[in-house]
Image 1 (cartoon, rainbow, N blue to C red):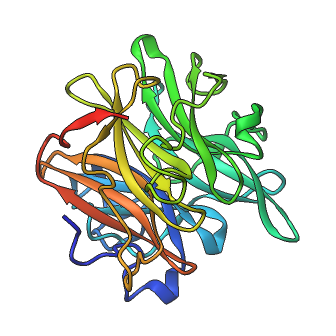
Image 2: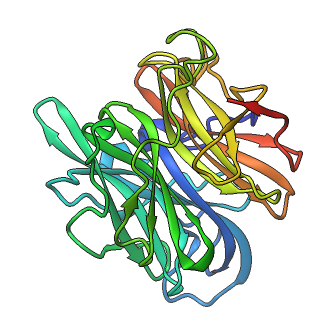
Length: 331
């Protein structure tokens, strides 16, 4: 179900002030707050704690700043429209930074994996993945001036982007990422880390490629490119991947696949795509970069995503009341 007040960030009243916000990562956690929901950070430095609340925390791509922005919400639908900068650009390979993923790490800090892009006269180029940490999840500091993941394989071409991390047994981490062209990557790959996400061993070949079995390129919704994965481990032991599929370079929709090992033998949801474009709306051309989270207090799935019409991008949310996603068949 589409949220009736989409887009949620920036909303209609703040579009001119905030500018383009896209490609996000979130956590829902209990936070000891010292300010009101409308306050920047939801925290006031030096103030006495008011209470502990279950808060959605969003890190997003803030295009006017070339930075990672930060916002908060108590329900995942109404967001603080005044963004803070969690991580600024750093020049060189990260002239602009975007597409963050944040999680709590073993030390109790927050780890952020993000995409860095260089620049030339034509705009942003290439793409590598960097890493930063934070004690509070608001202000992040890089642990190195070098990327932790770069394009190496032929299929990765010029860019690796949109990291998402899942925990594996024994403390290992698995990163899913998109690789390929700079404008929009082509396929989805995987890598593993055994040192907390600082160094990565790639799986090699992509784990998800465009679906050209269901129709010709340009006819089927994900027959041209697949990108922007967000992966969760379900209660049933399946890895569920939410991703953007392109039928051509400009038009994309969002779908779901699942796999027992998270690497092979993917099955697709029978009613894919689950989020599609709607002509004449804020998402007239593209819906992409999904991020899904289970709301413990509202007992519902929330799926945030980018919507684009022409060059304007904003973030919306869709709601699913069922705990399960539906029926899957072989892809």
